[in-house]
Image (cartoon, rainbow, N blue to C red; front, side, top):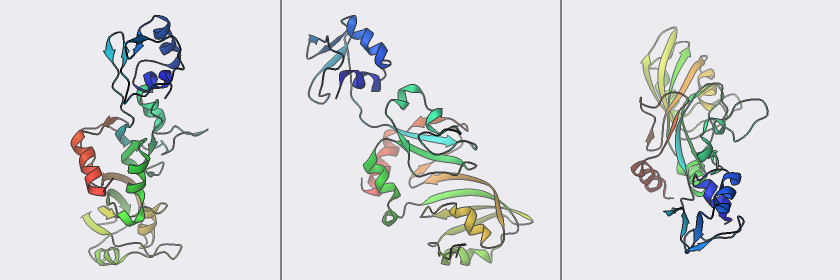
Length: 239
């Protein structure tokens, strides 16, 4: 790995700022002052220091975001703000990406990482990772719909979804529900309710596997996963 990329990724500044650090003779590798910003280093085998501070290399970043509406689940876009745009430059340096996607108008839990193996395991259909959503529905959702969702709903293209757990929080002309699914077809939750003659007017993801959004993270903010959350995620899904 290039030294300037390592230092930039670990929060020591932009590539230009790292170059300044090296000009100031503040960077050493195995005790030798570095002169070449493009020097190759092995952070697992060599000791890199910046003005006496050892650089601890962490190749992966794991972020839990409370995604707001109006922001798209992508790494870049020519028209809309992306979830990556909401990250601090330090975390952007890791070149992370969202694990799966939430629709532009959907809020809630979104995992962002640069760990490709973890992402593959979480998105693999055979893993059956559960996702819990809260939704407000224009139309009446009743107890009679629960078995229909448990059996799998046939959506507009003829696909029958995998069994889903429907919990009704309020039933009436406008209803409130929670829905747990184990797959992620395009607009799936919305299409499932359209199939029973209703319409989702608000959608928020509350949980993904062992990760829970909770009430403490403000909309549009994010945080790093705790060690316990990361361990649970990897253990739960065999990464």
